[in-house]
Image 1 (cartoon, rainbow, N blue to C red):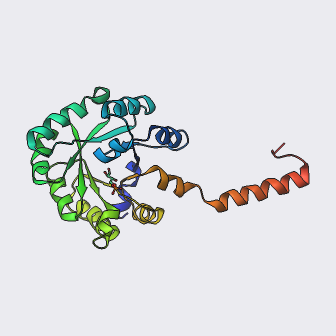
Image 2 (tube, rainbow, N blue to C red):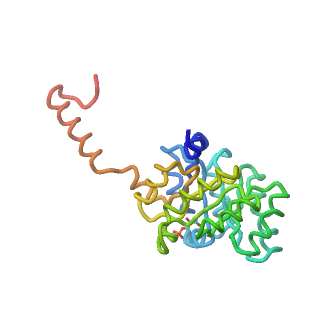
Amino acid sequence: MSPLSERLPNMEFFIDSADIEAIRELCSFLPIDGVTTNPTIITKSGKGPQQVFDELCEVLTEDQKIIAQVVSLDYEGILEEAEKIASIRGGKNIVVKIPVTREGLRTIPAVKAKGISVLATGIYSPDQAFWAAKAGADYLAPYVNRMCNYGDGIGQVIELIETLAIYGFEAKVCAASFKNVDQVHQLLAAGVPAITVNPGTIRDMIDHPGTGIAMKEFTANWKKAYGRTSLQ
Ligand code: E4P
C-alpha cells in the first residue's frame, strides 16, 4: 500500500464557505465532514462573525468540524482569538486556522499546548507546510489554485503529502483554494487526506448534465413501455 492510500480511510471533505443556505443544502444529501471559513469568507456572508458561528452550530452536527480563522497577526492576538474560537460549541470538533507567518508559526505550539486543534493556513509552498507540521499543526492548508499561479500547485501538494509520510508527521494536508473540478479531481485521485471546496465547485462535481439526460431517457422509455414512471 502506498503512503497516500494508507491515509484514505480518514479522508475528510469540508465545505469552504459561510453561506449557511449552501451549507444546509449540501449537508442535506452529502456526507460532509465540516466547514472551513476565513476572514474574507465571513465578510462575504454579509453577517457578523458571531452570527455566522451561531448559524454554523445550528446547521452542523457536533460530529462535523467548524474550522475558523484568527484575524489578528501578532502572537498575543492569535493566542487570544484561538482560545475564543476554540470555545465555540464548547470546543467540540473546533479547529483554529493560524497563518504560516513567523508570528503564526511561533504561536502554533502555544495553541496546541492548550489542547486546541490547529490548521495552518495561507500555505503557498511545501516548505512553509513542512515547518507548520514540525510546529505541531494538525492540518496544513495549501492554497492550491493560488499556488498554480506560481507553478505546479497540484504537484507540490502531492509532493507535500509524500514528504509528511516520509517523516511520519501526523499533520494532515487539507487542500484549499479551488477554482474548478479538475483541480479537486487531481488531488482526490492522488489520495489527498482532507480537502475544502467552495459550494459551486462541489455542485459542479455532482451535477453532470449527462446524468440528467440518461435518467430522462430511462424514464421516457419506461413510460412508453409500461405507462408509468416507477418500477411497479
Ligand atoms: C481555505 O480555508 C482558504 O481560506 C480558502 O480556500 C482560500 O481560497 P481562495 O483562494 O478562493 O480565497
